[in-house]
Image 1 (tube, rainbow, N blue to C red):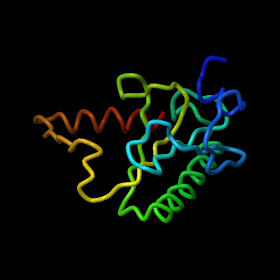
Image 2 (image 1 turned 90 degrees about the vertical axis):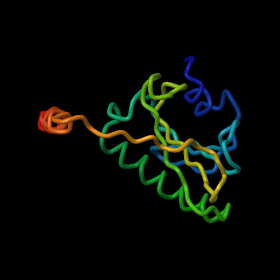
Image 3 (image 1 turned 135 degrees about the horizontal axis):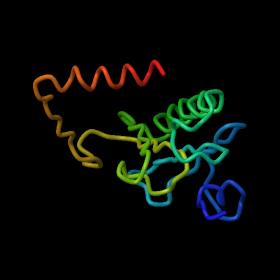
Length: 137
């Protein structure tokens, strides 16, 4: 299998594992944005978060919660970013569901500022209807 995370899970590639259970494995990112930057990955291969079965996703999120708490405690971080990129256009480099847990400190300059925009007249209502309708399917 060519998926680097699947190869890590199989033990073909070494990793600095901090936690694992039936649904997830957490290991330190080899190119961290901050000390303690950890990846929490699904034990089974799924490319996008919406492809993960609900029970498995619940287990993944329980691991994310546990590891997040441990990172903040161990690094004495002031906060933590929880990021999941889904698809190349969203910045997903490895097509295997994973969350980045990045410990943060005030003024660390790790991530750029959000640049929010305003909806154009009528745009919010149109988007709301499309998403609501899709959720009902």
